[in-house]
Amino acid sequence: MSFFLTKVLAALDDGGDRVLFHSGGVTTYRQARDRLRRLHAGLGGAGAVAVDLHNRPETLLVQLAALLRGATVLLVPASAPEQDRLTAVRAAGVTTVVTDRPQDWPGGDVRTLDDLDGEPEPLDPPETVRLLFPTGGTTGTPKLIRHSGIYDGMAYIFTPNPDGPGRTLLVAPMTHMTGNATVLGALLRRDTVVLQDGFDAGAVLDAIQEHRIDTLSLTPPRLAAVLDHPARPSTDLRSVRSLSLGAAPLPPHRLAQALEVFGPVVGQGYGLTEAPMIASISAAELIGHPERLGSVGRIVPGMEARITDGEVEVRGLSMMDGYLGGPPVGAGWLRTGDLGRFDDDGYLYLLDRADDLVVVGEHGTKVPSTVVEHALAAHPAITGAAVFGVPGLDGQLLHAVVVTRNPLTAEEVRTHAREAFGQEHYVPAGVDFVDALPLTGVGKVDKRALKAAFSS
Image (cartoon, rainbow, N blue to C red; front, side, top):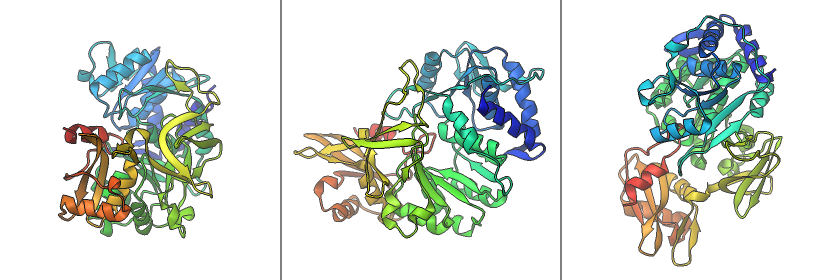
């Protein structure tokens, strides 16, 4: 019997009439348990279930109902392109798609939530859970990642808070690993979850103040939007006890600003869909150590990491089972695709994605795009920057797309980079200005879209 599912059912039983979800209306733990039983009955004997739902209580409950049926569950990112969704469903051997956009699914056993309202049945957890997550797919067709054991780990880590239930704000998609782990952790802790379907900085601030949110996580671009929002100075943020940052390297000056605004409750972590928990750093480790503002932290217990030819490799307890159709990972090392370094105290610093490294100049100088982005974003008039390579006559050229709060010229941006690095290779050959950087559904800067728009 799955330890994870047993703990989930116990949490739903214990919650009673406390609020589990604020999502337009209110869903109590008891109501969620009853709805879970009806969804479980409505699914029947589905063998492999794709969950294609936006952020709503039923997204979690359908996932749990399918797992309780012993089905393999594919979580389909809400923002995934149509072709990626179709490819993932075919590769996973999905027999049933549960969706709130049935018009997007041609043929097959496609069901809406209204189709799953069955007569409640007893819930009998199987021995294991089997989940599939697509990789981000920002550099090509996503692969499918198999996870099982990590969910039992969650059931050990997330236990009821001795100080009483907390209030978690969730803006990340529940069908992405980060959002999924957040909502499951909140359920296991018996917390209340305030759900938002999509990100809006003003709505985040409103929710923190209205619901006295104590736990939330944001990506760096979303944190920047919250910090820069005009309502932020007048918003009461004192309820926040834990603000986690991740999904991409955070500019050090933004982390310093977050610590100033939210207080000593800000930390960041590093993980992949393949290995969700790799490194973390807390506010206590940052205060008084400005040199660590660019670090994603030390390697968490149960994980190991090393640098091989500049690339971070990891192994340990939070690893995936493997890619679908591929061999089990076992105790082998996983290449993360991230370039990094360790300092003498064991703190990890990420330099760039290996795919985003730009090779410029006649001598083939390797320029980490993230390093240039952070330097540009430190300019007082620049609120966001994305740097990537574009084709030139003799190889790649460095190109920057920036967002500013005050007007700047391209030459002023270039001068700032020149002063920051003292090397011409780190100075963007071209600069474009936009009102906002495009983001993926999980809140990362969409460099694939930017390259398509500015590489011609």
